[in-house]
Every structure is written in structure tokens, then in C-alpha cells.
Image 1 (cartoon, rainbow, N blue to C red):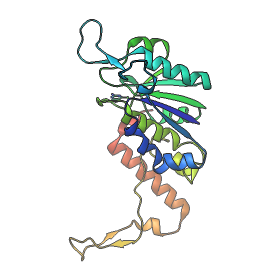
Image 2 (image 1 turned 60 degrees about the horizontal axis):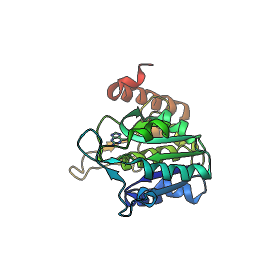
Image 3 (image 1 turned 90 degrees about the vertical axis):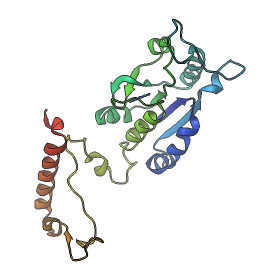
Image 4 (image 1 turned 90 degrees about the horizontal axis):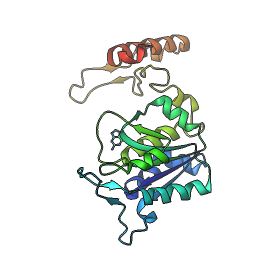
Length: 232
Ligand code: 6GU
């Protein structure tokens, strides 16, 4: 799939998308992420993309012209399944939305900034408004990066083991069970006489019993930490 991100701060997103899972997915040819500097699309000779709001409200708004120019240029090249605007008042981003978006061919994510963008763009060009949580960020760049990361990692083949993306917390409305690695008996630095032991069951080799234990622990942690996930 292809994700186009439109921003006034491309330097904030560029390094992030080259690293880790996002970088690997692109090298494998499973995802393409393109970042567009909104200032490259303005007709203003000083490269300004914002202006004062009518009616005297505080703050600056991104103008219609550069956004229209950038979106229109992208739409001339290919069909877009969604044109997403990041905004704290949008629909809440979650795992089902990440899964759904990962099945799309092409999406645009527009990073909101300042006090927002001219409302006419939201009315006429945007298909979906998305928030990543109930708190206010300075701009949509972090939200776009969060969304791109969680969308791309569920594309089949991106994470070595497909099982592992699908068994994550939230995919089945359960948090992860506890996980451990070697050594089986660890002696903490603060008290070397003490032993932090891995649960015996995990060393037993009984695959069915281990699965059962993991499910019970996942349920226990979910009840304790996120009972809201179990409601339905
Ligand atoms: Cl998508 N944008 C901004 N500016 N703040 C947010 C957000 C988005 N999601 C949560 N807070």
C-alpha cells in the first residue's frame, strides 16, 4: 500500500519513516510512504501557507489553496481510498481502524497544525477525521507517524511472523500474557541471594498447558488493567 503524508514539518516525519518496521516494510516493497511539504504547493511568494481566521478568533489557519493544490496533484496520479485529516476532535484511532486502513491501496494523511485548517477543505476534500486519543498535540505529525506505524505493521509480511502481529494485545481484545527470556533464574543486582524465577509451566515443554496458562494470564491482566476491553 501507499501512504502520502502532507505536512508543514516534513523533517519531523522523514527520519521516523526510514527506521525500524516502516523502513523495513518499504525496503521489502510492501509499503511506500511519501512525505510532502505543504509549502511546496503554495502560490504565495513568501511560501506562507497560513492566515488569520475570519471573525477574529485566535491563532492561524492553514489556507485552502496549498492543501487543494497538493491533494489535487496527488489525486491526478492515482485513486485514493481515504483522505484523512488528523484532528483532536476526530474519530478515535484504534486497532480495528489500523487493520481496515492496512487493506487500502492508497491513503493520504494530512497533518493538522496551528488552530487547524480552513473548514472548506474538511467539508469538500477530506473523507475521514481521526484523533489518536483524548489529549491535544501541537500538530498532527506525531499522530500521522503513530497511524502509519500501526497500519504498516499489520500488512502481511511486514513483521517476520504474521502470527505475531495478529496475536498482539488488542487484536483479540486481550492484553498480552507475561513473557520471559533467558536466564530462567535471574539474581537481581540489588540482592544476588534472591532469585527471580520464570514460571515453571513455561519450561515444561507442554505446549497445550502453556497455551492455556498464557490465555489465563492474558485474561487476568485484562480484567485487572483494562476491564473495558472485556465488556463485549
Ligand atoms: Cl490527530 N491531532 C492533534 N493535534 N492532537 C491530537 C490528535 C491529533 N489526536 C489526539 N490529539
